[in-house]
Image (cartoon, rainbow over all chains, first blue to last red; front, side, top):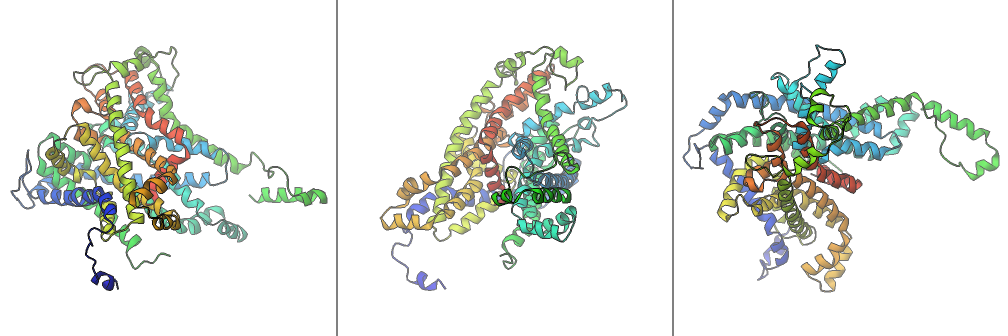
Length: 302
Length: 313
């Protein structure tokens, strides 16, 4: 359709709109060189045996075999799965329930929102260190409960390899649920008041209205929230570094930390590249179906 | 709910006709302590306490002396308030061999955050403007790559960036880190500005074009003055995001340029020496203070920023 205009090419095709093109150079460089080029570079070098410096001597899938044979990587993946599963469930449920409560035309809405969202403004390092202190078995919550008389009470997730990932989860939920609540609240506010009126006229109980009518209507908000939480989960790094440094032992390692440690501390670049490529694959598994639903799939929306 | 409705109905019938004509006055009558309200406010208050608890404990701990911490309860307010931990955290706390406290990290973070924020916003706003008003062939493709790139884990792109920065001779310097923040701020900021500029009335742009204004004239004379709110939103987003960054700071700078978050982590999680929990908590509050101030001052704009960043992303 545009063939006609394209056919009659003007002499200065490249100079047209020159300023816009110049202004877009940073974006083009970022998109092409860093995002696209960098990603391809890392994937390619994940098939080499680069150690201290990147070298192009291909070894096939060696790095990946070594990766999946490494106990530390397996633990990282397990941790990510547990952490990811629970943080998705809990942040969606808690976020939605809080948003529903906030949507009851309550007073002091701003105050409540400010309180729930402030942790989100903090760095993961700050969050991790605060919760490290609160969960300190010698001084923190455990010792308080014990001093109240329950002497056998035990709550030391950061020092217990079996449950350390839940200790991190608590901190992550503290920081992140406020954001989910805000997104959900925005979604709830976007729902037509008439729907509520109609449901009330029909005598449908409130919880049923939420489950059967409102939540299905908020499908879009739920999906975007899901994608935001999920892509945050894969990146989790700072929080673990601050809270446990991966310990006790290697019990709370996560993939992002594995990548960093192999690239910059263990001087084993090939492993780092292979691990980061696996992270990329994980994200692709989350993002591609969503992008397809949202932007592809025959444009069902609207 | 039903009860409240019928209550107000009854009172409406009771009212004399002339008052009815004047319409309802004052607040809608409501029972303050209905079961429903107790549940709602009760839950919200308990939840709020949970969110506030860490902040409270941080402040209390930072105001106590070490002897009091060893014997006491972390929730108890200090018996004797001391500001020594704060002074120590700011000026004396050690990371490795350096014992000049968090102040060094603070100033590093300032020197990183200010230029990164300004440059990334300048670049992204011009970019978003070009995308919204001066579309050229291929622009959408690059933009799509940029947005998809926002979802790629940083770990995938870190090493290639190290190489690029090393080739440019800025690896390990503040300049290098500023470049990195500009790169990774670009997807979200460009999206933010593109959507905002695309929402402005097109007639304005066309009228300026007819009058002979060019790319930069329209940007500086029309777009910029009309978009101050979105610049503030972008600034909030960037200042908090860059200040809170840890990964880029640790990867792309040398120890003498470490931002505050990295230095904080090194101070608190250092293995040598006696753990001084009060100093650690004072240091933690100091590091969290800047984004918290931004958050409390900006209020609704902060919410708008993250919503714009999140929902449209």
